[in-house]
Image (cartoon, rainbow, N blue to C red):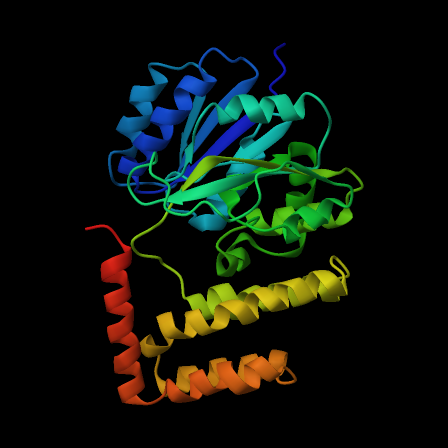
Amino acid sequence: MILIKLSICIPTYNRAKFLNVCLDHLIPQISGKDSVELIVIDNASNDNTPGIVKEFISKCTNIHYYRNDMNVGYSGNQTKCIEYSNGQYTAILSDDDVYTDNLVDDILNIIIKKEYSFIALNYYSFFENVDKPHQANFAPTNDVTFDRAYDVMNYPSVGHFSGFVFNSVLAKKTLKEMLQKHTIQEYEKYRGVISDIAHRSLSKTSIPSYFFGKRKLATRIPLEVDYDSINHLCLDYYEYFLKLYDESMINQADLDYRKKLVQSGLPRAIFVDAYKKNNVELKIISDRLTIFFRKDIKFRCLIHSLLYLSKFSAIKYLFRYIHKIKRHFKYPH
């Protein structure tokens, strides 16, 4: 029986164009490798996703394609990625991101030398052309081993789930424990289960984790996002880590690190999203943030003031106009 070392799982929905690019780079890296399997889980797409995958299946025998009868959300599709994996390690790859420059071989070389609880991949971002990086200075390019496994989650840039490679035994065990306590639907607030699996599994293991520094993962910058920066990237984000802290999954230093990230990201989030909200919504946001950060000088002097100003129509208009101008110059046309 062939031992599968690595399962690469791609949860996908209605992004056939991007998936085609992803697979076009990936298939040459896995063809002929019996130790690697590719699992594509289609969340009931209504575009040409089935046709794209079928074309690649004709070229590569180690692809498994599953199609859901209905859209089961981020959480449902990600859960299947972990559950369907047959490999010792499970890599999660977004359908619009790309493994470049024989990254699969690099991952295999890491996992055959030593057991790790988790491997994080460094990356660069791009708009349309994967060969033209837009930003690449997210983290240093040196490889790092973390004896305390959770410390990798506090390392620069770690958090993009396309850069997550799980120890499958730990991931499956953690997922099972999570779903015994919460329904899959509860995880939609956090855009799926992947992040929680990483944080919870690494907080409890004694197996070291690893950061692969070479920037060979290419992550696409979306022209539009389907989440709210203030809530998803700041409020919900910080509340999530407070919950982990209350459950003794992380320590005070871990929580302080997340607090600094939220505080640094809040001004931009307010600029991007506050003008879209009415004054009642802004008050609710301000009240929630005050509970967390009322003792912080930066919050009182800057963030609270920005939220207060955001309730005035003229400021909303100004934020919207500046945001439109910035998008015009930042994004390709």
